[in-house]
Length: 410
Image 1 (cartoon, one colour):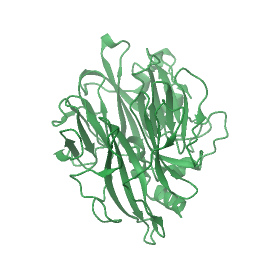
Image 2 (cartoon, rainbow, N blue to C red):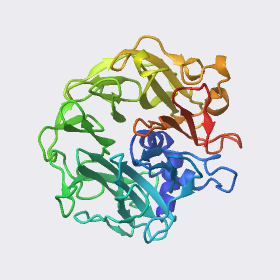
Image 3 (cartoon, rainbow, N blue to C red):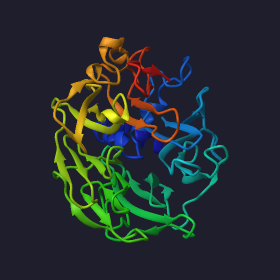
Image 4 (cartoon, helix red, strand yellow):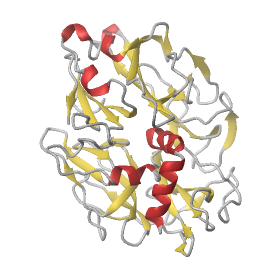
């Protein structure tokens, strides 16, 4: 049934799955590969793939198939049980305000039902938030689900995926709709306007949204995927196109740490914006034809006074090729880097001070970069696609700031 859906798509379309897993909260097809990996080693992240990451003021959360968590202060990672499903689920989205509220969308491995969960105390206790207003069909050849959630400007956005095999698992019919729930105001999800909602598999919007972000300069919201769409007035429920980028899918957006603005990226280009409407193409690292930009993260250099670095993760579009770990470069302005170096030559883990870069990153795809700029820990995390890459491959590693030159496997 649905498990066959996941495996078939994963084998037939690993590139698309990697794109989604790297930058979107959704990673549907890739979850089958993750769940197939043994988790009985000395580390839950050994030979596994971490595809998303979030935090509250007290806890970190790493997403494989299920979600793992640990206190920011330290300690062991533990699998996160959710109401009614325990740990027998596939996480399809995670969103947090960085303080107390965190949301998880998950699909049960038992009956393929999909719902959203919420914790209002930093991730200690959980309850069913629900999907009121969204109809999901799980019957016959149709398996609908929530396959992405995003939190921006106090509004929770959820993507509904209509999915039907129509008897051909390798060529599914899909459709996507974007919904919103104003936290503290709404009583159910409502359709976002400005997009053509999917009314059946293959009808309406047939390309997924990769996310919704808050434009820090204007407090507007930006939805992105096949283009960039802006919502300019609160409540942020109606979007219109502001940019088509370079004509390819916009994979991700993140707030800048160095300036008031956002960084955005496609498979081969990085953009910056300070107003949420005008996007400037910046210099990107030169990648091989088999690699793509999987994630972008701005981090401080050795000290905030010495500027900021841009870290760019790489993915691979074919299982027979290898990725290039990550690249790093000093910014002269938001998103502007004149010279890129490999991760073993950057400020985070240079080889000159006993770098562990080569052991943990060399030739491996990076799926997620996340810098904790909230707590006193100031930790940079990297999710790696380590499934099937040997017993010394880890799916989650971290480096403390100020940089010590060492990455540590979680």
